[in-house]
Figure 1 (cartoon, rainbow, N blue to C red):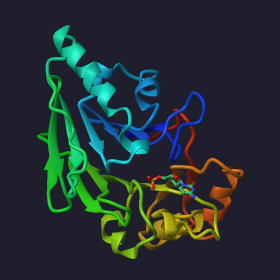
Figure 2 (figure 1 turned 135 degrees about the vertical axis):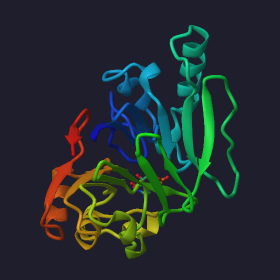
Figure 3 (figure 1 turned 90 degrees about the horizontal axis):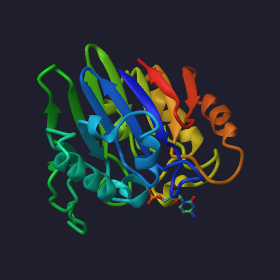
Length: 244
Ligand SMILES: Nc1ccn([C@@H]2O[C@H](COP(=O)(O)O)[C@@H](O)[C@H]2O)c(=O)n1
């Protein structure tokens, strides 16, 4: 499994970068985990959009799905120009409140997902979803393939109820929206200590800190998380690829 950081910022993108987006390449799949602001442009530095096979949307906050509409247009154009023969599969966290629906368009096909259903592909790739502790309906995803495990928590408060879904991940991607000591929970998020603690309690092998704050020295996040987690810690950087 290969995972590349396409967008690493919370809330809004820094100049020339993007908010949440991670490209997962596994078997014949190219799956985008979240499609925040700036992701569509940044993604094309690495692949052509017609190569994408699926997109997982954790929740319907702009920093996780702002570029979805334009991605749908790209798929429509690629279908019309016969550059894409299969519609892009959108795996979207079911929005209980149904405040936003995703338009039906040629080139994309939506499948609502929730915490009680897994998606299994023919080659054995399995995606299992779990509800996180965020404001609104937000799902994390556990990806399993040929004995390797990747977990992406998306947005969440620190919550040990998540641990069974994170257990023994070869790579755990968590948010680290604030610095140690800050009450991140009030905003539905985690600070760096909490990210490290979650990785430790879940016995993750490697931790990738992302969904970063727009203030302070983000290098500190890694040092702070290391107080709570003894394993390898990576701080998300644009274009960084991790192989597990
Ligand atoms: N006082 C605040 C409030 C929020 N943030 C950040 O804004 C983002 C909000 O994103 P949601 O996913 O909760 O919609 C998030 O990155 C928060 O950390 C902040 O920095 N300060």
